[in-house]
Image (cartoon, rainbow, N blue to C red; front, side, top):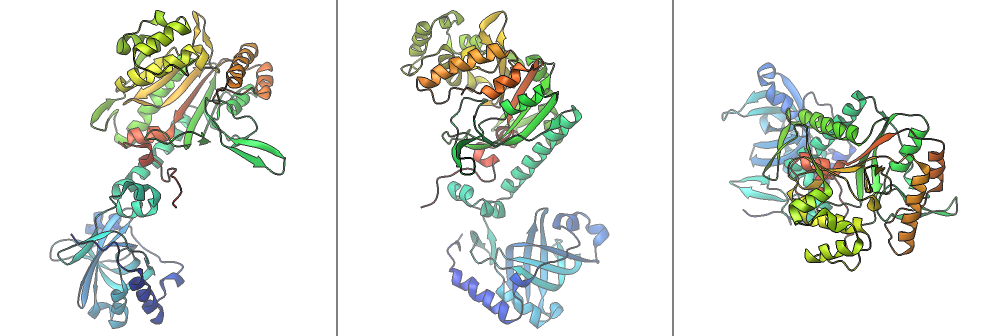
Length: 495
């Protein structure tokens, strides 16, 4: 298959000049009225046969044949064939065909019928060029017909997402599913009685997560601010203020690396519900994922990277230390002291030089040995309290926190707590985090005096939940990388 990807741009510019000389400047047209989308015309052919329709879209294949030409025109719903004959449209209009290229956007009006091969076709009575594609789209040649074959370069796909969307239908479908997933999440929360709110993106204190923020200088206030790393602390202020079921779905920013599971700018759902706890959040997660999956697939099962996933409740509950015992053969008793925990980590072949908390070691073992085994939906529970500075301690074992993370297909999809509402306990946790920060831990939680003041006015028992929407989309659209679930993933700037 010969490629025309490097067709000289000058050829297309000359065709644009030709259109303008004929008084058919495509960029002068402001509006085109179409009667039907492509899929609508095709699927309703029995009712529309012989009737005049008007379609518009991008040319995705083009076959000129002297005094007659065939083209496939694609819109968001699909594609339809357009047949243009000089005898029908007249020589002046047909001369426009000579200026057409793959990628051009056209409008065609004519009777709907079938060709001799049976394909539903618009037999054009009129044709307008609505936009000229000045850059060649990757295409190939096959039996005299030019048709694109899609982008193969992965970085080009992410960097030029607009081109990726043009030539790769599966990418467009993924992004349509993303929109449906987000709409379904909002509908579910609406039915559950939650109110959607908005909180600041620029924050003087960036709290609510263990992450480094991006910083920016606010000239008018003569002060450094941070892009938020979480939605948590402002939402809990609203629980203090009297709202009982609230959520926000918004962008958060974390100054960290890029990977198939991480993008520094991502969409987070956080919700808080008064008078419930960790168990209530587990029930909510099960119901929410089931609701979204039914909306997408009319059932509770789907496939991710060749693995069949079943969301049927109840999901497995796995205490973190029990998971380490099961998958890494380390007994819970080995985490009673920092020295013993380090020895366990070294025995497993993990670097321990930089570890100075038991929770950090537990988390590292979990990431290496437990997470890859969590294929079916699982709630990992009972995280160490020293890495959970915003979660209540377990009354039966204060070294552990009332916290869980949901996992599916080895993906961590969120984080949830029985939230601390004791301002004295919360201050003690923040003080401990401040010591860690002073010792060089840039991701330790900062002191937030205004949040502590809010808690001192009184916050009811509350369950809180955060879900990474991009990872949820990644999972439910069978996308191997988080970049495939985001329209414009972060990339290093082009040189």
